[in-house]
Length: 226
Image (cartoon, rainbow, N blue to C red; front, side, top):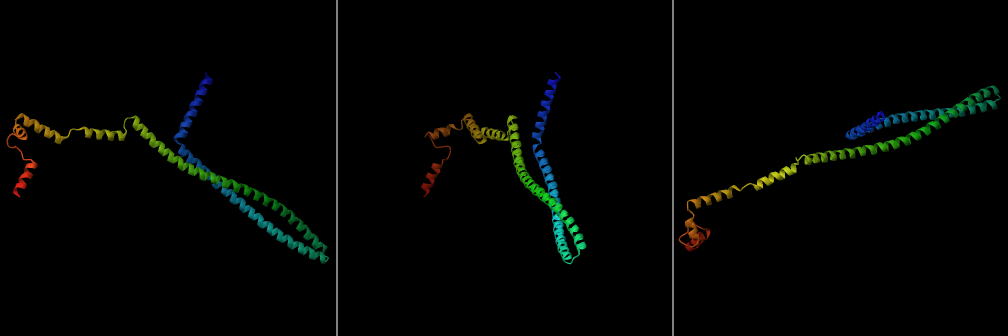
């Protein structure tokens, strides 16, 4: 029983987490990009420090080489002059500088290897961040399209589609009675009721003078006056 409840709770928590991640996916993407940018800046600072140390070692190596070469030349002159004591002292200093030079070269080489590795990592990380930022732009556009489509679907399901409402209003206007035609019909009804159209009907049939002038009659009169 307890194991079943634990499994159900774990599944519910996982679903809730997935829903939360889906709902705030854009915010999470932006936050992850900010974190990646922060890590990239920290890596750049580390790289700058390594390069600075490498350059310092290179300067020390150059200085040691110059001093060592100078002491070798002086010790050689001392030997030629028979000053074994001075040559011995110079040889001891030269040995110490050569040992230090060896250590500094090793340090310089290690720094160079670390710098090369870190540069490659930075370049790869920078490319990935650029891809992520481009992907975030695409994701935001996709999310806006999804929200718009979701609203349209909700309107359609709720029967509140503005397009359908506009079509319905147009149909209602077109289905309404024409007031001008209705007025003509009313006049015809009134004429029939008071028999005022009987004479005109007989005139139209050719019996007696017409009650109303027509365009043809007017045109005929105008021609006779010419």
